[in-house]
Length: 550
Image 1 (cartoon, rainbow, N blue to C red):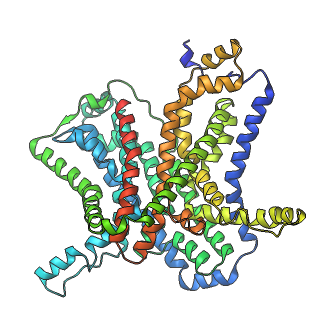
Image 2 (cartoon, rainbow, N blue to C red):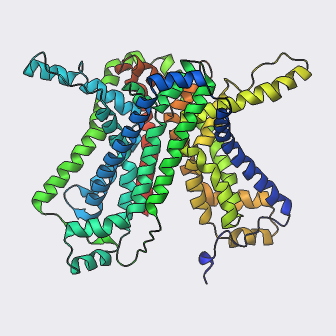
Image 3 (cartoon, rainbow, N blue to C red):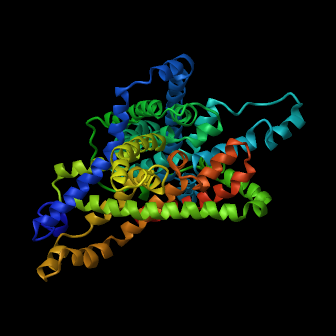
């Protein structure tokens, strides 16, 4: 048996001294507990229900909040499925003009934050926008279309979130063997029947995972629904906190949103059922279906239209606005916002990757069952930013009142808040939220380190720190770099937790976009939006490069 075939976690020895392994496991368990604490705090809020607030919500908004949230999830789920699967099928299975370019161009909308797409859509298509103004000049002054509708919110989410389904479905289609589809054709299936009855069910786990990611992003969003004034649970949490100044009610609303997230993940797991598919044989991408000239033109038009609406037009509009307001926007205020965003993203990326490394080593030196305990730390990614912000605020409030304030009094100082309203609160929210983002590339890189290499180093007398510094870290460098970039960009774009937890005077580019869009000043939000999109293009290009190497 080759060395590569040996399970990497089995029989791997961390050190001759068991204390090092115990310390590592204790640190890993502490991280898991830190992630779970906000969740438990939110659930504990039901111990003292806010009857008056709930009665007010039940009488006025609760039914509409539930209806809006369900409609949004169903609509976005359907749209990202249709767009993602169809585009993945076109670029993976068919050969038509421009296919090679569309393979990676169709991933670019992933770099556009949904709240940026939202205000671009309103700026262009709203009643006072240039498009409807032109049409009223042609069709008459009474002509007009209301774009502030539920359908518009669903379309905005669908255009920026379909790449999740596209990337995973395309990878699944490419991994399917040609023999399977050929057998279906021999048994009498047409091309359409072979797709619906064979290829699509085999790709279902990947498609379901992509839909789950898109739906969790939808539930976590605050900026998009705020721009459209479309009330969901996320906006209700924000209003309960800053409108009613009732953190307890916000926590109870957040726990209901947490229930939505749990149901989404459960539905994704259930959709997989007991299905297991084994791939083998020739790869499909070596024998693509050659589209006829007419079909090739239709596929080219379809892909171009999606790319145009999801990326090209928004970027052109942002550039036009930014050029028009560029001189006024490029001031000390903009560079302060940029500096805050870069500083927060850099600090959060370094902290998150360091903690993710601890968890990755914990999982490597644990049995498969024990590794599942450390995997619980990745649940933070399933928490919407607003939910996480409420949980952290309540946890830090308890620590301030019951531990830090008595400690300061015992030392003779007047109690001062040390955690609340500080950058530490934001950093805590970021690393809990994005720990799963950093863990993926790190664990993948760690799996490629053969157990014999650190064992050989220890045989030659190297200690734990030297093995970590001279064996593991050089080999983990690509994974560490990828994790740093992904977390950095996610923190740059993050809005709900930043809005709720930022210290006074610590506005960021995302906060600036929210402030400008809340006042309808689309042009003023263009420059910070372009900065965020450019930052978001980095991980997208890295993903494209990685997929091509694969």
